[in-house]
Image 1 (cartoon, rainbow, N blue to C red):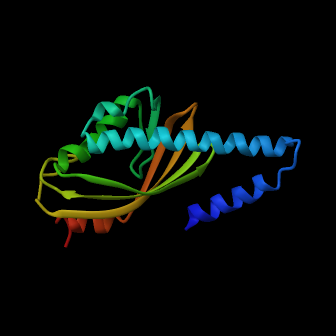
Image 2: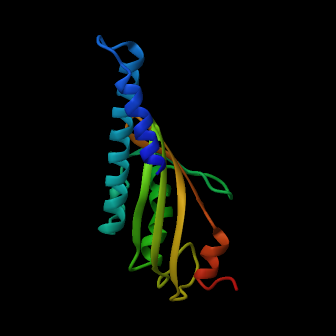
Length: 169
């Protein structure tokens, strides 16, 4: 619904642009094109990562060399560390399913609403498998730079996450 509202508002703004096109209309069109390109780059990389179970999809073509994951316990910076962090989800869940519920944004700022499902049947972040099913939704705030991911910050219910994994009662 939010995406439709954003598109409708953008469509109205663009429809209000008169000929000849003014600077504000040109800037809006450029921002929209940048947003669409960033979303495409982002979704392509993460789709390859999860669907093909290919950690090499998180590479310098789509991610800045200083890509950063912002976490409550400290930032994880650098493309190799970024890739290693997220590879835990591939090793921890042999049947991982990742779904984009929605991705929208403005220029270099994106918001991803996602769902992750799988069976915790492998080691993840040093935790031993419990063979419990996980079905978790959350959001990620993404910052892009020059067409590549610069940073991500994930938000989800950690209590639900740990309970579903059988690590909390």
